[in-house]
Image 1 (cartoon, rainbow, N blue to C red):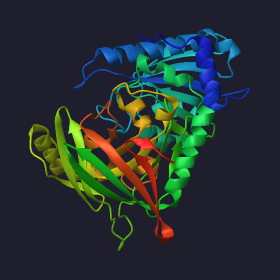
Image 2 (image 1 turned 60 degrees about the vertical axis):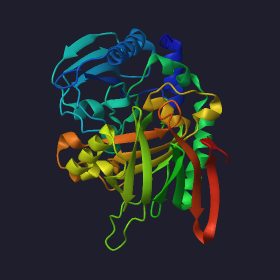
Image 3 (image 1 turned 180 degrees about the horizontal axis):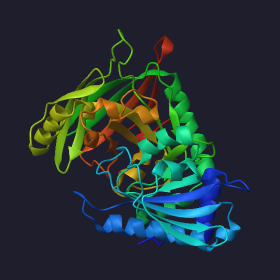
Image 4 (image 1 turned 135 degrees about the vertical axis):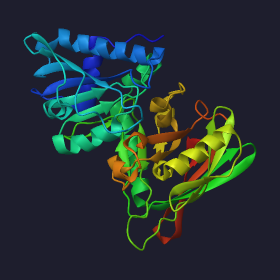
Length: 379
């Protein structure tokens, strides 16, 4: 098992990622708590331990840090990835720069975020979408680490300046692209998905979050783009095709039209479950993201967790897209508890039965560029 970061390593990470100034507002570490329908598990428990150790490292050196205060905030889990966060924290521990310590409860989360310069969310359920939305208004910088584990510690010591440069190269291609053709293989059969990229710009998540309002994952290393979702009257989305996704040992095949998975063409227990999900919540099937990770070029290997493994190669997401500049927000879902953004990651550590054969970007003027082949970037 990889140990945690020590203080010097954590301080260096914060400096690289956030570009800390001489004076900063509060540093807030967020964790979500087991409860309701979500029971604790060893990985979740250890993640909270990691977060508390980070808090203790920073708190013990508060006098030497630029933050007004170091804070550890705990909130009731929302039960789904990227659902809206609760209005209030369950509890909040604050260490001031002079070392004074206080505990409070039921603090308004929005107010705590507004007082923060840097936010680290080390949670079970991803808080990326809601924190991106809130950061635009409140101005904090944030790193989200949903599902983080000690196996990912080495990836926090990578050269994120170099990674960010590589990510920007991929983003520039996404900016130019009007569509993408994706070929995936499962069970000896090839499936194709054409993704409409008109009217969209790419995004870079390269681990550099120095601007006010910037929020992204750590570990980081991907460029991503929201497909056109057909929100403009009279202009339909042309995203269509077949998308295979592995669940346990079963490969579920989604039929996509108009940028939404509308049917399941495969059979089996998981196919039935996914078919029911689409019926109960159509917004679940919205194609919300096309992403390409670059960390494989740095020798990073998969650990079986989306947070890291999506940064190794191709991934496609369902659900909410408004936090990436798309049009599918929580109001598009039938119930608040249905709100989700979930990534299907096409690397062997996550989906060993489905492989990414090829990704081809199409540009204006009939120009095509193959950017991935056999799961690897070739540009």
